[in-house]
Image (cartoon, rainbow, N blue to C red; front, side, top):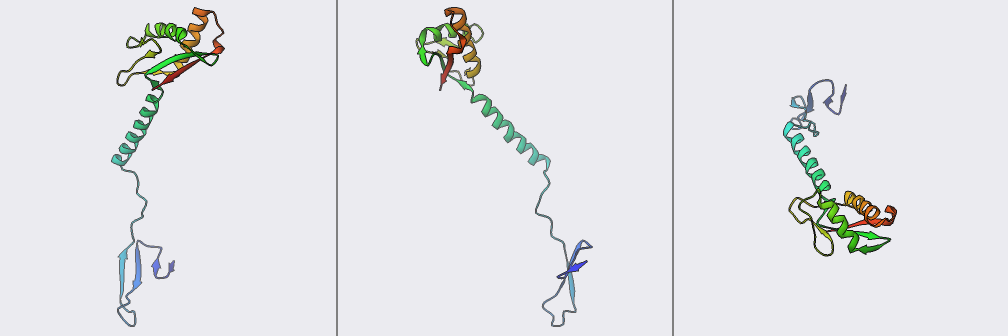
Length: 140
């Protein structure tokens, strides 16, 4: 099949040479390479590294340096201290600073959802309260 001087059946294109008046000379040029590149191993590795870095960042985003507990929307230092004592039994780098539970180490922190679960547990065990009345509150 040929259209506008391009031979689609082969690997070459045939053009009429515009420099000759009768167009008797023909020249062929290699068909241009497609612009789409197939991924190479190095491109794939770079892509995977970027994706893993993103997931690592997202996982760290859930960690905070300060956490406390709210009861029915109000911050409770008593519950925060009790929760920090419970949390600190397994997380040795945490301590209560008089207002919140703290873990300021590089690469460390307090994960928000497990902290909230611990707030609810401490509220129920230490204060006999309904765990649905409690929310964890973390910042930094």
